Length: 276
Image 1 (cartoon, rainbow, N blue to C red):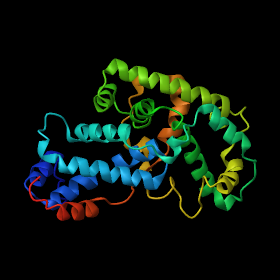
Image 2: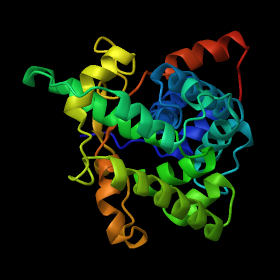
Image 3: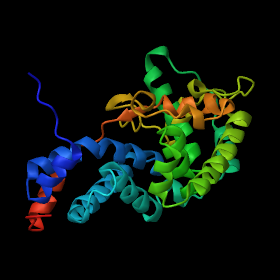
Image 4: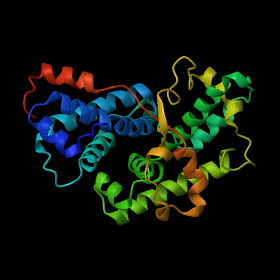
């Protein structure tokens, strides 16, 4: 007979009492969500891994203050969002790229065909490109879009994570949608077939420019599901005209990412962790 998994609340109670196995289970249950949020915020995989570990360390070392007045996932999401709003700018953010800059960069890449057997690189180019478009939004708009549009979280849940009112969250999401979708309608061949830009014809140029590394895929390895399969969809909050754009992001893979539980255990052991 299958063992029923312990709830977050039970794992937290055990972890607060110093049960490291319970803490490992809690971390492993939620680490992929944090990693996938971080990856979409910073674009570069290794930077996302560092941010995820920092977020999980904050959560674990403050677990003793968790009183259960909200769901653990809501509490963790607030920690993740606060960290990602204030963390040092990533390489992509340092470029302060605008949608105009991105359009010019895409135009500068020569169109070249790739062999059929390298379609995994086309997929990597596609995901990398539309994820890079998110970098043209400011951090709060980017988070609002990822939480509300990509991960399909409710207005109330996403607003709580961003520490804004539901009305303010809807405004952030609306502005992000408008700016992003206008660019995609004007530039992206995935959205508007009249646009000449095609992932398959840009992949080789992305490799040459160092934006895509065939030996170190950022977005196509460790797939566990699509966002669409894992995230709750609040269709009542998505406008019909936005569906085509949103689906491009929701069809992206959810990645497993590294297992942070072991490294966290080592860090906590070195810091003299006993009871949280």
